[in-house]
Image (cartoon, rainbow, N blue to C red):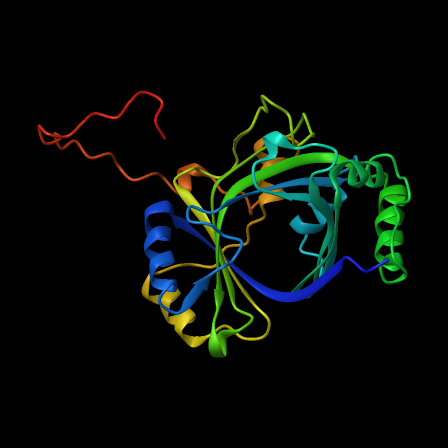
Length: 275
């Protein structure tokens, strides 16, 4: 059996950016970067089911800033509403070792992934995948992991070209989530925004060093690094833990004031419910 295991290490830098400015940044980045082949115009959905202990161990490890910490999640790309037992998903361990982010994952059918992570069943795997499969099972059983929160957002991704191979920039908007109904295919999920909808999360991911022109871009636009976790946002937004210093408070990032200019007579008023 061929190995489905995919692993990579990166440094990650995160910024909170108003949606309007994010669109400008995307266009500026496109002058030096290429659109990810898997990222259509308008982006694609990313949905993640996070596992944690009843005491929220992984959440507290993030809050306490442990030098080594891990998270287990099942991730799906695209529209989750049509999810079936056969839909492809990734079971992923994301861990932090000092400043380096490491990810290891296997792609397999959704039903198999849930039996592996929820029912603690062994899954078919190749010899090269054995250590990862055993690690996931060991985490789930030893720590009594359970589904805890779902996050979702719309992502646009760009990748570096030429000398910037290895550079990846993602822009995530409409970050939302829920703390129940943990099946991806739930028809009427009780999602709500966990980061104010007028903000995007921009992540710069590099293998070694950040290109100087990226550093110049962030300085020119007065972007400040933030320590933010979409999982932490979901836990705190639903009152599962006290709000921490990492929480994004809408009062700290108020939306732009609405303009009161009268539309031109030829303008058509928007339809109710249009987005």
